[in-house]
Image 1: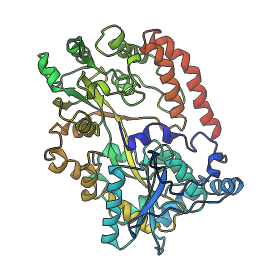
Image 2: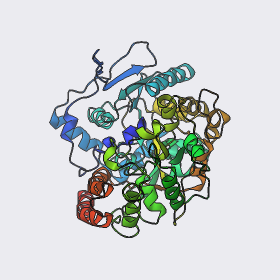
Image 3: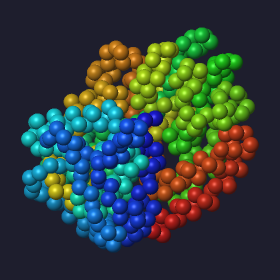
Image 4: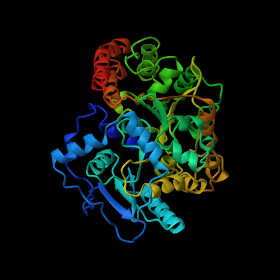
Amino acid sequence: MRSDEGVSREAGRRGWGALPRRRVLTALATGTGVLLTAACGGATAVTGSVSAAASTTAARPATNATTASVTTAVTDTMQSSATGVAASASAASARPAAAGTATYLLQVSTGTELDQYRELAKRFTQQSGQPMEIAFATSGTALTKLETMVAGGDPPESTFLANWDMPNYATKGVLTPLDSLVARDKLDMNSFFAATVKLCHWTVNGADHLFALPRHPSPLALYYNSDLLKKQGTQPPDDTWTWDTLRQQAQKLTTPSTWGILAPYDIPYSLFPVVRSYGGDVLNSDWTKFTLDQSPGPETVQWIADLATKQLGAPPFSSLKSPSDATLFNQGKAALELQIYPNIGTLQSVAKGAFAFDIARLPKGPNGRVNRNVAGTYTLINGAKHADTGWEWLKFLVTKESMLFLASAGIIIPALKAAAQDPQFLNPPAPAPQVNRQVFLQALEEDTQIPEPGTPVYSQITAAIAKALVPVWNGQQDAKTALQSVGGAVDGLLATVSTAK
């Protein structure tokens, strides 16, 4: 899983969320708005910006605020009251335009995606006459950069946020509610996938608001090595497959030189949808209590562990570099894996046509076909100098043309239905792999989609669960014992959230 899902990969969750409202991360005292260039030895660019209005690369001014002044700035900015949210909502459509360059903060620092946003900024400026600057940061530092820019009084007009990061920033007043802007400009939110739009809403002080426009959804699908299935006389997965079918076929497809499946160890991305399809979940409905240790949670986790330790249809956990290690599938040595849409491009570049592959829907469990509900979103930042330009930029980014342009690199499934249903996305010409992309649209329209909890301590919770399950994956402890052992720690983390409100 790649790119902005790297944002999603927990690093981005370590922002303001775990802190009480009037506390501030001491990290905010350090300005990170300066462009750091990579050395010849291969250092990675961390933060910087490139303006569409000029051909030279320019850095966003670094803040020189002291710890005390940053604390004051963030405390003042982050007051989340009904008055503050209502004021920003009503003022959004009335704010006068200001001369100058607006900024979009991108959570990617190198590669195709950065190049695409540079091109989009250029097109936006050509069409609108409004200069747009692309600031950028690595996924692990982007939220810190956002916080620093806000604290320094020079926030970007807009930024990308993973859907689980959005509630925290919405609650703390960083994001501009978009309801009045959408109504004023008659932007049809029904033109996007409904489950994805749902993730763009959050309730602050009892009032529901739209705080983002959807960029992309990211459901899971079942990838399979067509050559290995054909060699073993196995029919491709179809809509009748259950998780038990998958287990049986994984055993059948395992040979001395290949594995049947890469077990879905990855937390939360592949493990939790399987648990939910059996009727279990990680937390209760109001995110106040750990429930994965309650049936059928332990039984489902044990079922996954047994794929490797008893059924011998999956490689040993200890042989993998990480729970999400897909190396064996990429090398043509595993027949099945659960993955997201950008994996098509990964296989194209890594496998280089060494084997044929295709994609099927997730298997069904007793609770039906359950998928994850995940989205990347575009947000408007409160207090920016050129808010009108920022809003025009967001609308430009969710046009069919912009969505298809981003999708052309294999990075996203467009959240706009007209773009996702376009042949340009579903059936791109060679050399793009000729696979069943329609599967992802079926998942969005037909699967039960469950979002990850929006609690700000969720990254700590998933880390604790992942650590507790290592001996389970290695066959050294049963799932029920391991999950019961971590339950108290998870409930303790959840309690810190309620006391911090």
